[in-house]
Length: 223
Ligand SMILES: [Zn+2]
Image (cartoon, rainbow, N blue to C red; front, side, top):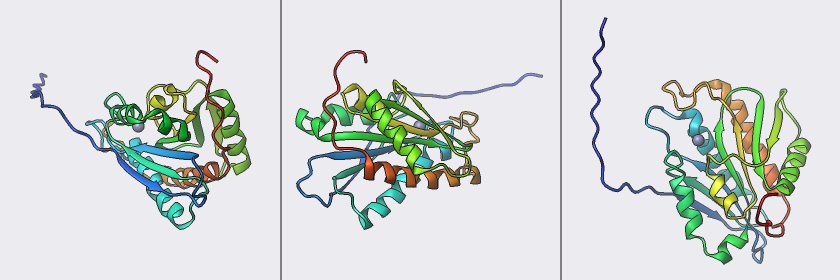
């Protein structure tokens, strides 16, 4: 048996992506201490992208609704990044555009990327002092339905928290890793991840309410 496969491709010109940024002012108008929660909305071309990363986008939309109703003390930016699957183009451009004063205002970044099936929440996070705080708060939030959590330091380089972390900002990447469908044609909506999406929304609200003010700048070099 022979199979014939035709593949036609062509170079495009420059492609423009758009990050969508929602700013939610804090109740404390004097607070300079800003939190960022982000999720990328692009996918690789081979997949519908329900897990990677419509799940994260749904979580951010729900957070926007909850936080407009009940704002935090600190100001918050919810960022829907484009170009994550293209060398983190959207988040890299965003961080590059921040001036030193704006960079110093960012207390931490929570990146919601891939809420799949299963019971294991993986948090890739740094620096270690921030890992400790996140771990403590995940524990105090309580585990539902047998959800376990593992934290890993240093944070993995492959998602939108990475440019922030490289710029010295405490950052965490939250995922229920569903690698069996990652970047595949069968990454389609399924009921198995809905409960985890609800869990992550509640957990992020808990983290936003309790993570401490901006820590001292991270020391450069290996920790
Ligand atoms: Zn992703």
